[in-house]
Image 1 (cartoon, rainbow over the protein chains, first blue to last red):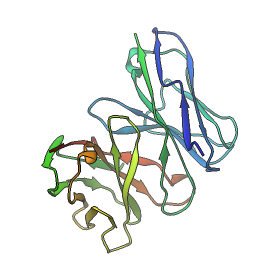
Image 2: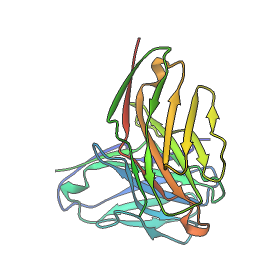
Image 3: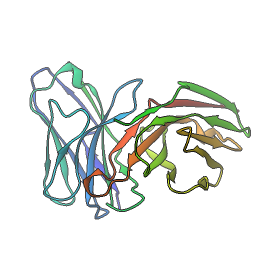
Image 4: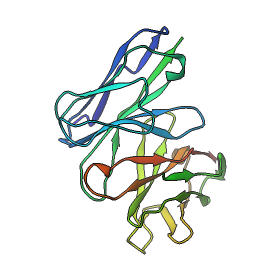
Length: 113
Length: 118
């Protein structure tokens, strides 16, 4: 039981390049989330998927797209990377029940030059 | 919009001593959840403790306990008998309980770095 896994762990991009961050969970959770963590700030929600087939914007969605491929997988795509997207990205998942507890992946450190 | 504020960027404690980390939040909701997450140097986010707003009793998990003051919108974390492994960044987080797709949208504070001295 691996929990939440993310690939890659590290990535360096040039401005304008595109890439997709992958996330998978094996806990049969309904909900999945993408956050970014910048220095001196807490995690901020980019997008979330309450259940398979649905996605919604979070606090900072600009410059990102997501795909909920199936119940297990939730990917985050940067179409044209910008230096402002340099950050650590976390994927999380949870059951849609009370009290909600999110389980986080190990994070991806992304640098955009 | 909900906000979460951690006013202590850094705290330190001697091993075996007790330390309290502060958190305040702002919300117009009456039903919500509050969490403390720990992030060690490995970057992994680990849930430490959670509190349901409708419960008056403060949550406790082994050496970790909270002081939840709903009227004051305050949610502090007390770590007793501090250990070297407690050294980490600690985040306070808020989640509104409104059912449906509002579940699980966490709002985080800025974090407090805790150093434990041997």
